[in-house]
Length: 224
Image (cartoon, rainbow, N blue to C red; front, side, top):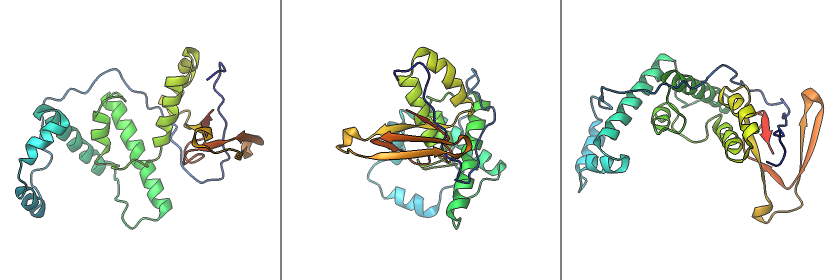
């Protein structure tokens, strides 16, 4: 980022969507877990039968993949907590939902996740984040996924003063944004993309640029 201030462009608000603007700051405390409970008291009989057919011990493989028994216990504790939050917050399954309904519910779920992580003091670079999210919203294409991409762009490419100014806004969701990706490295040329901001009567033309999904819904800022 060559300029001192980030160039953030407001996209047109023609897509109906809800946006998260609450205070969701991460605290300095860290969740300490003493009780490592099991993920579930019972196992589906069909699943138990399939596991019994394996020529190896699935539990040993699980311990290997996650770095040992203690980390597996911690993962299960975190996910048990997430399942409890799922029920308490009235989260719903996506089955039979329309696209708009599923988007709204996904927005609800990711809002619940971010707020709870902030309450628990779980840091954004901790694997506990993924463990907690998996039972509630177990796929990558959730709302604000690209918001994290926009934040990472600022954190990794912004100047010190830019980071001081913009990262707190990203972290508190006062700014929701993504980044503009040029397509020059993909042997594409001659592409012209127009972006208009109806609220401020802004029109911007960008040469050879590609905006990753969900711009304007929910990401309202673009990092160029």
